[in-house]
Structure formats: C-alpha cells, structure tokens
Amino acid sequence: MIFIFTSFGVDAEPEVFVPENLKIKEPTAVTFPKDETGMSTQRTVPPFLGSAYNGFKEALAFKESQGNYFRINTLGYLGKYQFGISTLQLMGVYNASQFLKDPLLQEKAFHANIARNKWILRKDIERFVGKRIRGIEVTESGILAAAHLAGAGNVKKYLRSYGANDVEDAYGTSISEYLEKFSGYDLSKVYALRNARV
Image 1 (tube, rainbow, N blue to C red):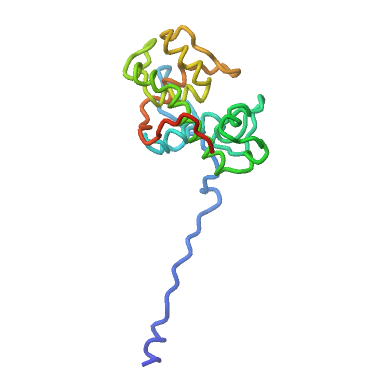
Image 2 (image 1 turned 180 degrees about the vertical axis):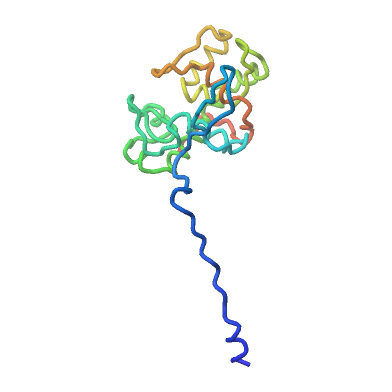
C-alpha cells in the first residue's frame, strides 16, 4: 500500500515567474485617447479604487505626494498627505521625524483630520452640498478635500462668498480645483468629530 501511494508522488505548486520588466513599482504614464487638438496625451494616474473613503484618500494622497509616505515638499509639508506641523499638533502629533517614519500614524492622522474638518464644516456641508458655485457642483468630498488643501476656515470663506474668495496654495492649486477634482466620493462612513486626535 505504501509503495502505491508513494509512486503517485506529490506535485508541488509550480512557481510563478514574473519578468522584471513587467513588475509595476510606481505609477506609470498612460497614453490617453486623442484630445481636442488631435494629439495623444500622457498623464500619470493612480489606480481607481472606487468612490468610497479608500478611493478618496488614495486619490488625494496621489495628488499630494504620489502616495509617498516619506516625502517632504519644498515648504516642509510631510508624508503621504502632506501635513503641516501646526495641523499635526492639533491632532496630537508633536514629533515630525516619528510621523514621517510611521505610515500607520499618517493614516490615523489623515482620518482624524477629515473627521475634524467634517465637524468644523458640518453646517456648510448641509447648506451647500448639491448647489453650484461658478459652475462646480459642491459635494461633501470636494469640500473636505479643499479643507485638506487650504484649511476649513478658507473653505468656509470660499463657500459663503460663492467662490469670490478662491484661495490658492503656494504651488497655485486653488480651492475650486480641489472642490471639482475630488467631488462625488461617498464619505458617509467618516463621522464628524469635534476634537479628533490620533
């Protein structure tokens, strides 16, 4: 009996080999169909992860740092989501070096910041979502992305002035750009917290 069973042998799972040139290690340039001028365009785009919270945070992270946890920009903003020191201190993070080395802490800080901004902007979200300001439909996710860019106070001014106070960051990105680019994500699973901390 033992002889019969051992004669069949055991087939090991075949090892899968992926050639080095087919491995994806970073975002890749993708050729898009021709635009209005008849030219093909190339853009680097993140993978689409859906229209819920994960898709929102990864799209925002890609815009901020191309998803790099260890990036520091020319103005000293840190990590995957490009936080300033003063914003981190509001959420209970006081060590920039530790923050930069800790991806889990960065994710917690992002979530806390979104929850805090949702609390600060709760009345404006209720009042403006569904309306159009300068041709842009206002959504909750657009408001929260804009607050990540320019701060909740500046977003309040923008909304209450119906777009007249459109603040730009040091790189020229405006509240209206983020309001439009990050519209339509479902952030209903993020709860507004008054003093959200990590």
